[in-house]
Image (tube, rainbow, N blue to C red):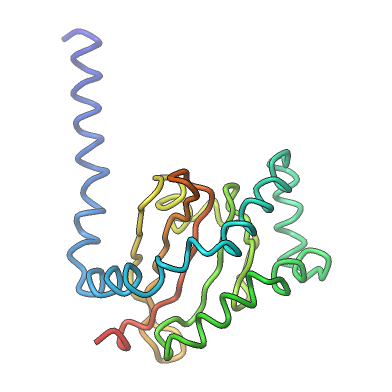
Length: 189
């Protein structure tokens, strides 16, 4: 068996392994209603100029960060350093997200926007860390490209069944960041 044939077989096997989790995810009963809710109620405001401008500004500010710089910021976030936390928690984008969450009638339990490095740009509630690029919510949206919606499994939080739904945010058909929403799946029925 030549190298090219072996590579083709390996690539085919890998594509089957990659497709399997996505197929299993689509079978979960909360995926279709959560996706429909996001498409109808959330995606229209993800192109709001305030959202786009905040992400573009963050992308510019973080453009030259090395991984050790990101790790230091993340460590400061975890330590609740106001110099790192306040610019994210107390900005116009966070105010915008809080208004959208509050207007959802309890469907949206949280929201946070990430830039092209996976760093939080704005949010409704605190996240445990600043850097999200090491998690599926960013990798399966921003990492995939424009138009992507990733619906994660349902988890129990404070007596509610919450699924995190993440969406790539694009400007002029170019992925610039992502957003994650906590969705109370019982409120979708």
